[in-house]
Image (cartoon, rainbow, N blue to C red; front, side):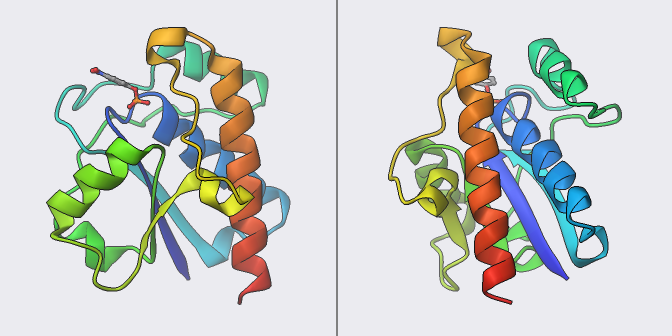
Length: 152
Ligand code: 4NP
């Protein structure tokens, strides 16, 4: 079982998009039983809130429901619970280092690094360009799944 936690600032846009797109990619390959996938925030800003409506709409177009997902915040214990903890941008990476007190087992990754880029996932919060985020998340998650299935 490979346990993955996607992380962003609020857990209402980027990381839930990654959680549900990754679950869909895993399902399409018939690998559901081999993965546990979740997402969480570094901040308390949106705690308890549902996935942001434009992200819900975008997932729905892919036939994916995110009903029942409400924003949660990462805690120190998540470091031991998950195998791969994947941030969306450099700020998420710094916040995770602070909350986890470092990265002693090398579990922290930035999503786009799996595509060979040190870029951040496009942040739709100010740009409203949700399809740019969707492309990044889809490409990042596809590369992540290839990496994980090649390295088993
Ligand atoms: P997310 O988007 O980190 O992708 O879920 C944001 C959500 C909330 C805020 C910023 C970004 N905020 O400032 O509350």
